Amino acid sequence: MHRPEPASSPDASVRSTDTDALVSRASAASLGYLSDPFAPLFLTPALRRSTEKRPPLINIGTHARTWAIDALVAQFLADADGGERQVLSLGAGTDTRMWRLIDKAKLEGRPWACRRWIEVDFEEATGGKARTVVGKQILKDPLGDAIRIEYGGTGLTSAHYALVPGDLRDFASLSKTLTSPPPSDPTGPPLLDPSLPTLLLAECVLVYLPPETTSDILAWFRQTFASGSAVSYDPFGLQDSFGKVMIRNLATRNLALPGAATTPSLDSLSGRLLTAGFATASSLSIKQIRESVIAPDELARVGRIEMIDEVEELNLVLSHYAITWGSFGAGGISLGSRNDD
Image (cartoon, rainbow, N blue to C red):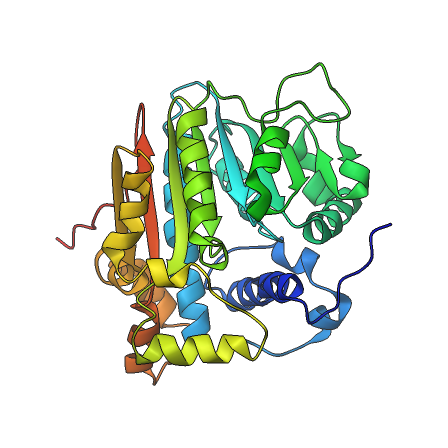
């Protein structure tokens, strides 16, 4: 029998960070920083009733990180050239990116080139998300045929989507699940097809894992797929006074960052992809992305939503978070730089 873990356990604390991210996305969307009609569907009744908004600093950071990751994922899928691609999202929680990007593709009259979008998280997270998804028609519609609750009620599979329960720290076991058929169709195709270009997505996930686990995941990904790309969002450079205060504050919530010591710089973030065998890898801080990648008219639009007085604090925070991307095999993705001219 599965016994509920204490609310104060380290794993429960890590899962609580997904609620923080969900509330931040819903807050940013409600104010117009980004479009996400799906985030409120995952809020608890108490959170839906709350009128509390995130401060401008959080909303601006949420916009920039979301904009950059969306751009890279959309670029990966747009490069399909009539073929199929697939996405593996680690520690996805209540992420709504798949639904948002499908919605955007429909509005722009573009085909959806993703064979299957797979999300992995603790079973407590995937079980709750599976129940929400099957209970909302707007969430069920894009999933394709054969929607089934799987893995003892803690996951879901369909023609185009899967929610897979698993502990990333036991990746040897989880990787077998990901490259096997779903339980409801044991003779069918595997969840992930190793012959297809695949995107690995890890949004504020790897810092919560032991460095050796991250290395194992990246090595498995590089060795399993013929071609692929990876996108991650991570804190870095936490050895300074800002980082030390952040780590102390997280400790009061029973949160530790075992991966932080190995990412002191932007080069260390891209370097771990190169060490795993990726052909190319780059990293930019969120501050750099706002300064050199996001279009000026988009920054101006965002700047009109709320006034922000703490510009120095904003830049300090954004200079400690980064987007990293890399590729191997055919194709590749890149944020590039905007042309201000």
